[in-house]
Image (cartoon, rainbow, N blue to C red; front, side):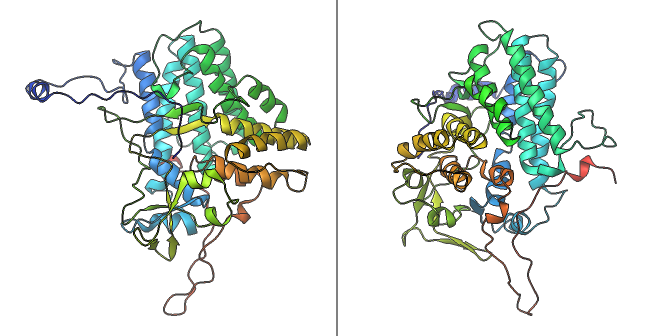
Length: 433
């Protein structure tokens, strides 16, 4: 299992006597996830924004993993995961499209209040979270764009992908400027997911890391390179160092919705079989991320899909989920080098992560193989982090994603729709008509 550098919070169970005591009281306290005008302190808005980014993260990641063919979600109680997500079209009124959209726009509204607070540190954090939320929305909707008007007026046009990307960059750069004027410390606390990134100076490194990711996907190699130089990229550092979503059993919080015990008889979240087929022999990332089920724990089959690969990315219901890590930054730097035609530097960066995975380094990296190589490394290094679909779109390679069910017919000889790589629609509640 991945071992992330993250300080653990100690969770203290309440005493029975205390529980009985509060049972006699009127429990009237503000929910930081849903602050009102009366309760919206800077701290509650920051806490609420972080919590909002975790809300429905299971739906968001399952969307990204299934469409990106990293996983199957074999849920007999809800066949939409093996039909809508793998055949299309995705229902604009269904939960697969609407819940991640709603969760991220709720975060954005918190962030707008942070920016309006007059606190430079809060504004820098708010703009950074706002940009991250828009990035996640666009990761689903892609060319369908997103809303940049936040007033609920659906007669306003949905912004194009290019305009949304430009807005993300503007927010990150604005956040960076705010953080520069925020002093030595924040006036509020961030969760343990930001351990090591919880001051204006260190949070700026997270902001620049996100800017590097976005700039790479814009093919803006100069901006990406500049952002990386101000991020936390570290050739000799722990590849797992980064910023994370963290979970707990506390009130108004949630667990990691992606975790399932790999030894269960039936697991809904299964790794796509191609992850084993395409792995390089001896890759420690494969053995860390996956267990191959044997006769004791049988393969899982549903709706014509079968896998014997169970994910072991998380060891418990409270393990963290990365936002961005050093390993990704090193591979983003490799992409920048490829974009600049510097294949020797790209190869050196890819070989940093290959060495950590126990693999021999590449040689002979050139224009004909560099993109495929960096995509392979990102696939295995960033497994289940929700990046593969976006990466494959970026390089025009969604046609290389495996389609498992094609050319099928039903019992009456009628054609069954082939699998496809889908794009998420704008939710029906966000468009007129």
